[in-house]
Length: 207
Image (cartoon, rainbow, N blue to C red; front, side, top):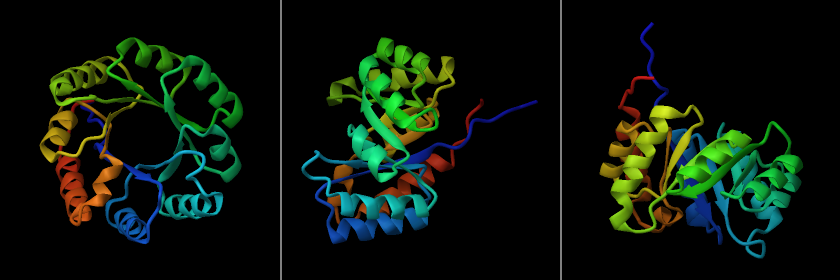
């Protein structure tokens, strides 16, 4: 039987300090775009538990998974769906022991293929690939395509602001596109996200 991969979806990021403008934009994005996940970013000092708790309720209430960057304790204490952490076996083990088998634990691997394979074998729920500078963009495309052809663990293309790049990565098989948290700084953030969501959602790929 002929099979297609599920459509690529958005993975949103929001970073402290959480302004009223950003909260309003996020609420609209959750309503209009149905992203798969939202990551809450910020240092321990920046993450006010009351504010984060309200964000988690808002995100989960819209049907999206809510992850917290790095802070395993905050994810456990506030009822987030999981964490996004660096590609480190010890850190992954700590997160899994603390949060349990049902938690969503994703790992940021840069362009590290060995790290991605190792963490996926350990049970990571997704791996995220990113390019630290423009010259590494083609390597990001190649790494994403390589992963999608071989592995079943989902991959995220990280900090993608350009719609053309999002389309290329979707065509190469990535499961999620994560625009940078700075996308909210622009006056046209929602318009850009709508265009990106429509562009990647229209692409069908062989499973």
